[in-house]
Length: 119
Image (cartoon, rainbow, N blue to C red; front, side):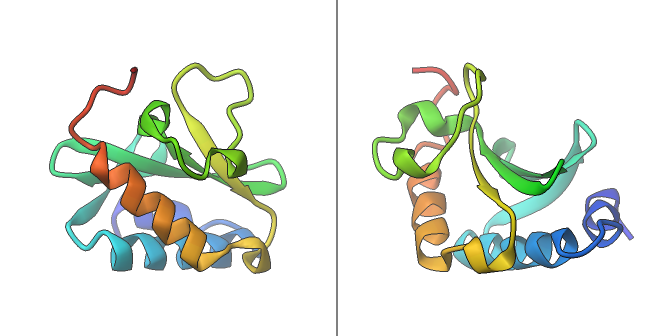
């Protein structure tokens, strides 16, 4: 088993189910993406460009987007929490995941994959 997959599988519930659900949505929406293990986290890449990472932190799952500086849509759903580049979506349960919204955000991020992380 690859380290990124092991990270997801070893998480306690409900986080494991949330991460697996998000993984399914990412791979369905961005079939050209691939999962790597960087910075001790599962990270999705398209070619050599990072798209997002998955992190179980405290009592939520965090999906971080490096290209968030270029996003003009859906920013009201994201948190930055004093981070300069990354914005993320946070989920405390699988029921909180809006599949359509999440997939729309992924498509928006994909449009900016070749840009610098900063504006």
